[in-house]
Length: 563
Ligand SMILES: [Zn+2]
Image (cartoon, rainbow, N blue to C red; front, side, top):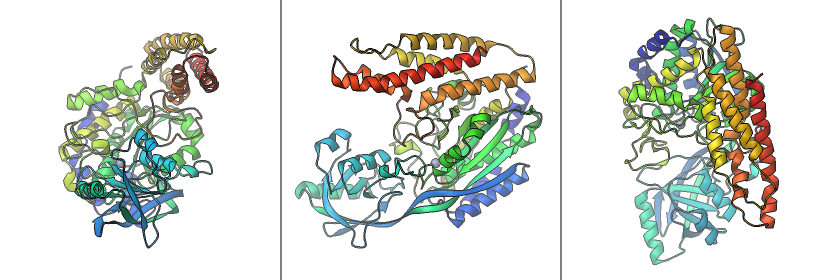
């Protein structure tokens, strides 16, 4: 059996720009901060629309640690500067936080290491990121002034803690107050500091942080003719926003709704179900919604979710670059195919990054996309390169280009169309295993250490060969296709946690940059050591445990496909 091209063509050609622009008019009405009434009203609108398409919808509420920035300004050298504060930053007292300013420029780790910033305010070029909050916490700085790359001030969440804090991760929450000012104001302050170094500044910032109830909307589109045990494809995007957030993430929500409308009309051709999740707590809770959902429904997701597709900020004006859309290696052929078809661009094969509600890697679910379209590289970039209006009050309907929204939504429709209808679930796990092989080959352990990777290499090579044979096998019955789906899912449960987590799959790694195949990181660290040093011996302990874990998972994967 081949892929149903009629279904795919219908699905893609029925996507309507008018329908999506109508949704965006609705989303323009509400500021959807996590846990607020306006967020609930907007979500209610989505629920009504999805019910009218024949989906079964469920609204959940759960406890979330949410931080809403309020009024802020900065006083310096007798002048008041316009500023915003940030989600998860500490609020200041009424009198403000007054300390000397230390200018760290772009604030690399080396600069932090070389400078005593304890109990001071640091001045930093660029946006307020979790990485900078972490460096400030370690270095003991109590205040952060971030200089925006331009006149616009971008809302940010500072916490590196993925999801709600728990009794172990609560210590990693930010411990400083923070503001962002414009590039012009940054220049004024910096010039004054070169004349009179270590002048004090006063940060005034109100931040409303605490536990509140936030919603998750789930909507299920059942495949009409699927076998009883058919898995589902998770299609998710955040619904909470900064300001009205018509692009981020209104347009993506419109994409979700429109793909679903067209799929519901053609559901007879679906072999797998579609589940939509609209998260809260993305913008002001560091992915608290998706993380809670992953923990709460772990076993159900492990058993039935075949792939997670995420969507963020579709159709932004000038967002013409698609080649950097992230995809897991096993899904990058699919990404390449659908991106090329609708834009003519080649996909770079770029990996998923640690953002965009990617809370399901520990479970072992392969993931596709997040931010699909960006500003071209030559545009002066901000974080994520989504346009100067991103995370500002200017994220309005005027910033949406209907033609680009249609293009992006057709790409999603096409990718999801394959995922729900292709009798052969389009996961190229052999490519993922080849990627593991090449990453392993880069690691040369020092001759002094007692650990050898020979057995692991051999097992991964065998898995690669067996995976190719498995994927090329042609089948002839719905039961055989379903069995193939189920086997690939079980193999993913073994490999995705190696590809995208450091170790414990039941924890969530922090919202900080993640190396490729983080499970190899302790082996890479060991490879950096030379001689029979104590440092080598210390690193050996962690490395041998990682290699044991890798070998076990690879052997489990082999047993699954050769059974
Ligand atoms: Zn977003």
